[in-house]
Image (spheres, rainbow, N blue to C red):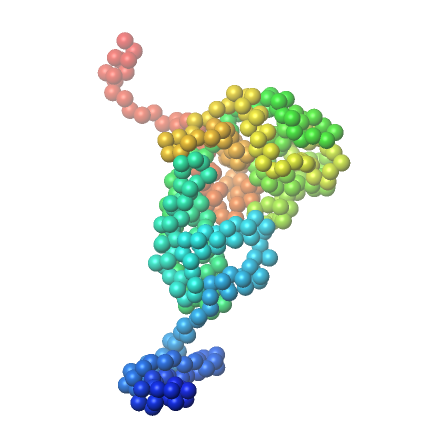
Length: 379
C-alpha cells in the first residue's frame, strides 16, 4: 500500500510554498483515510517510507484519539446493562476513583505507568474505619473492574494493548468464623431483637430461623433475603437458589434438614419472600449486632493498632456464618460438592475455605520437646 506527500492548500496560501509544512497521507487496513503533518520534506519522506513499510508488513496500528469520557459513556450504555445491579454500581464507583486520581483524557494515554500511579494514589485513600486506609482487597476490587473495562476498550479498537495490572498482594488472613458455642449464644439471645415488625411471627422466631438457615445452607445473606417461598417445598425441604439472586449465576437445588424446616415454617407470612425484611438494609446489621451484644460476644480486632475500632470490629458479620458452614462440613463433603453448594465459580476459592477449616482445627502433630524439660515441668 502506498502513502503520499502533500501540502495543505490553505496553509500554502497563508505561509507560502517554501514555509508550508509537508504532510503524509495514507489509507489504513479498514479503508479509512489518515494523514499526519510532519514538517520538512525530508522528514516527511522518511515517515512516508516508514508508513508504507508498516502497511506492507501488516504491522501498522493506527493511533486512536477516542476520549475516555466517550468510551465510558458507550461502555455504560452497551455493557453495564448486561451485568448484575451491584456490579454496575461497583464499576461506576471504580471509574469515579480512576477519574479522580488519574484524570484520563484520551484512551491511548492509559498505560501501565498510569495504572501504577492509580494504585499508588488509591492506596492512600481513607478506609471505612477511622484512621485507616483502603485495604489491598479494595484496591484489587477496583483493578479487576478497571481491567475488565479496558479489555473491552481493546476489543473495540480504542486501546492498542491492555495495560499490565500489578495486583496488590493481600494478606492470607483468617476471617471471623462463628463457633458452635457462639452460635448457640446468639440463638438464645434472639429474644432481644425488635425487628422485623408487622409480620405474623415474633422477631425472635424470625432471627432464629435466619441464623439456622444461613448456618446450614452456607448461602450469602443477599441471596437468603431474596429467597422466595415458591422455591421451598415444605414437604421435602427442597430449596432452589435462583441464578439471578446468587453470585454463582446458576440455579442450584439443596435440601433443608428437618429442624431447619421447622424453623422456616414458623415464620411464613403474607410476603412472597421467606425472610421478608420490611426495613432499611442497614438495620439488619444493627439488629444482628444487638443480638451479639446480648449474647456477650466481643471479638478481638486484629487491626486494632492500625485504626480506631468501631462496634462492628468486635462483632461477627453474616459472612462468618458462611465460613462456619464450610468449616463444619469440610470433613463430610468432597471438595467438588462443597464448591457446588457454595456456588464458587473457581475451585481455588473453595480451596481457600478448605484451608481455613484446616487452620481452625487443632493439629494432631506432637512437637518434639526434650525429655529433661518435660521432667522439669512435671516436677
